[in-house]
Image: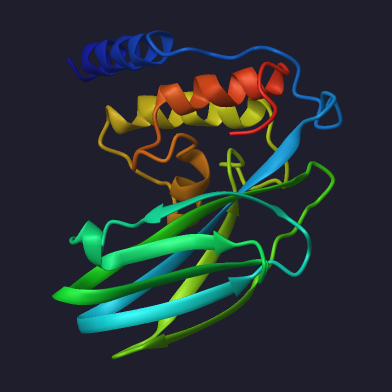
Length: 208
């Protein structure tokens, strides 16, 4: 009986994997298409209770290309949140003033930046003020879910395998991996993100 159950489970598992896309194109990390850029996501994270206001400035000291910035999951009142890039200061300026107060752990803002694909690290000169507590920041190379320093078909396949494992109740991605794998920035890592990474790897798009 146990042997039969093992066999049935093996068939079911194989079926889950076969139902998801597998991207078999070349994975040569140096096969970068003309005009392609690395996409980076810069995240402000807060953990605490009763944050009434915060303000921050992230100075673009390295000549990166600013893409966009938006509120994170902790911001409940859109009208009391401001974020924007000041070209005169070469800086992203963000801030929030309650109500409501900010409670919990999550993201205050997410911004997207572009660099030449040869840029392998990303940093902004960041400072902030808050009514209470501290803000931490994280930066990820968007699409690099396997964290090997480049974005290619290996990342697309990684997501396909991850989605298959979710059917078995296994969610093994770290916070950094989830930020990197969420290419379309909708809060989830899905096969849609894998397809976009595959398109980038084939030269169909220049950035995310």
